[in-house]
View 1 (tube, one colour):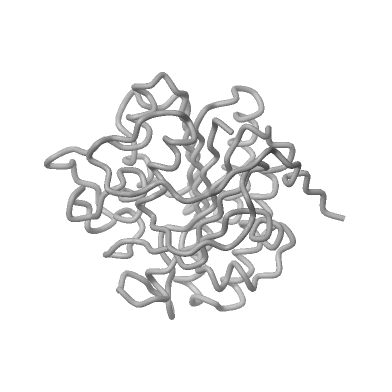
View 2 (tube, rainbow, N blue to C red):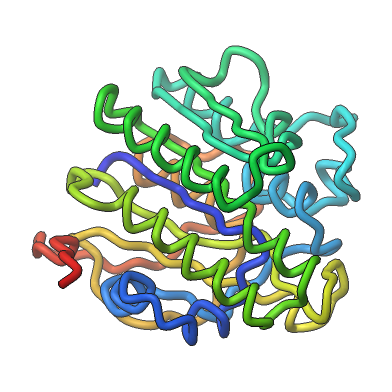
Length: 271
């Protein structure tokens, strides 16, 4: 286990994940270290949360408080910059354009953007997943980030926990299943969210907005539910997995994912 595939489903609440009924979602929860009550940051808004995920500091440190990017006054290095300095190959695949600002120039080996606004997020989810899967198969990168935006779009349009929102969770797990199928066992798969939501919005400090799931899945990880967890913990966990020292400015901790001798738990085949 020395590579990482990080998949983020925008706006995915843990209770929606656990009740969506998708076979691979159920498989992933039961075959992983599952943090079902992890916390995001305030404001619980997409770009601030992503900046905190990539830079392992709260928004008051990185300075992004809305979905408009501004340069950091006192820059903190992100995952991709730290890994690039260690000669690791990073790639990002996304369908919400603001994601482009999460990494600095020359830190990525590859990236691909498919507009959710132009193609629709359902189609854009499929396309970025296929592009990411193809790149993993051809280049075996060290760190891959895949952003899936349909769930947040459906939450804003129809409401969190609505039928359309739940359908978007299932469609996202169709994409996640595609990404994980025949994935080499040296990849740690992390599936998470940036924030939750309530009614047709998010951004508050309510539990519905602030609680996120974190799935950490690999044959060498002991399965089971874990307590705690924070969006700030993901960057240090990525670096620990790749054998790279976390940046000294980072505030998160390494997620507790007890390991043991390998077992073939990712050999998932849907009937």
